[in-house]
Amino acid sequence: MWPKSVETSLELREQYSHDWTEDLRFLPDAVALPTTVEELQAVLAYAYAHDIPIVPAGGCTGLSGGMLPVAGGWVVSLQKLNRILTIDSTNLQAIVQAGVITQHLHEAVEALGLFYPPDPSSRGSCTIGGNIAHNAGGVRALKYGTTREYVLGLEAFLPDGRPLRTGSRTLKNATAYNLTQLLVGSEGTLAVIHTATLKLLPKPRYARTLLLGFPEASQALHAAIRLLREGFLPAALEFMEQEAVQYAEAYLGYSPYPEARQCGGLLLIELDGDWLEAIEAHCGEIEALAEKEGALQSWYAQTSAERARLWELRRSIGVAVRSSGPYKEEDTVVPRSALPDLLAFVKALGQRYGFRSVCYGHVGDGNLHVNILREGLSEQAWREEVPRAVAELFQFVVQQGGAISGEHGIGWVQRRYMPIQFSETELALMRALKKAFDPKGLLNPGKIFP
Image (cartoon, rainbow, N blue to C red; front, side, top):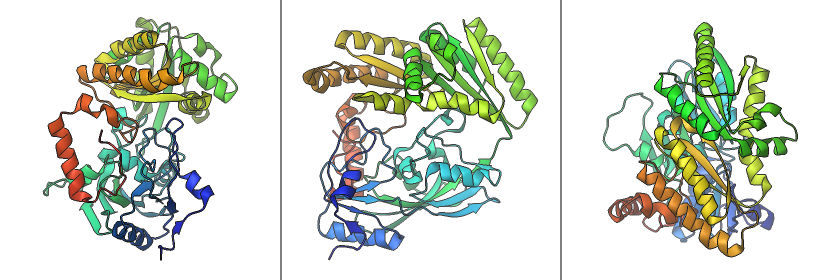
């Protein structure tokens, strides 16, 4: 007798057959929707005893195919384990279940004057568990870091249902192996996380936002590098090339800033802190620096409404490109100084292989999202030649001291490129860790490893 939370309707199985990764779909045999931790444990124990593959799922917003049920089996959705259990204003911590929507946590802690910095673009639909599984970044990672920096402890189940507790509620912990950080970014291949203890910060009192437009995309990137070299540390430093803005405008159905479409590259900069005079002074200094770097125009948002308008332009790019047709998004990350060369390499690669790309991203931390559009490419070119181009792209990235994923993870679609960054010795160590946690190989099979 299956656990009661397991369902087999075709509609539900189709709902969990895909995430936001390209147009890929894999139909699971069933979907489990546990409403309690005990139900989750029962599902895992049953599946393990019957050799059923298990794929944990959060908000299904991933971009690397991390929750695709490529081997069939059961998708286990954590979405109903969605309670904020504790917000501790004294110790600046929150204890939350894995299915909590990231934006819901933002709103709950900010109502108390607190701040949870990780801010992925899908924050309105992604979950804390998914963020932890992929070590999600987002626009505020430059100043505040990624999800990893805010996870103090985890409660999880091993594939057979045995409980696992990691970390503690302390800010310092030098006790043996750091299993907490091993699970962060493990993409649901080692354990199923159900509860997390997260670090919070006091909420900054003020924020101001700038949009700076440059004639060429490379000028915007050089300006970003200089800005950071001069000692500024914005909460966010985002890059958009001209085509990215055009896609966003087409998706929104209007032009929030019509003049922006004339700029080859734009920087969206947000500064926050507790001293308004200092923030406004820094904004002025940044505008002056940008002018020296060739900026054509700047837009300065002071009110919440003006800031929201600027961010609407940036946050809509991903969904705009995704809605336009088949595409592949490569999550490249390099040392900041290599960004202009990376962008030039991407465009040269497109000319050689015959594809068009749309680039944008979190350039403050060197993270450039490269969206490769299929458009008129043949099936053969899309399935065979474009992957060769992506391999060249990642070889270039690694040569610059970068990595093949900054925040999206490896999942299903990037696993073939792992040998570009890792030796066979390093991959063997990772596989040994996987086997120690999951001897049968039932937990999220087919992910990460080539």
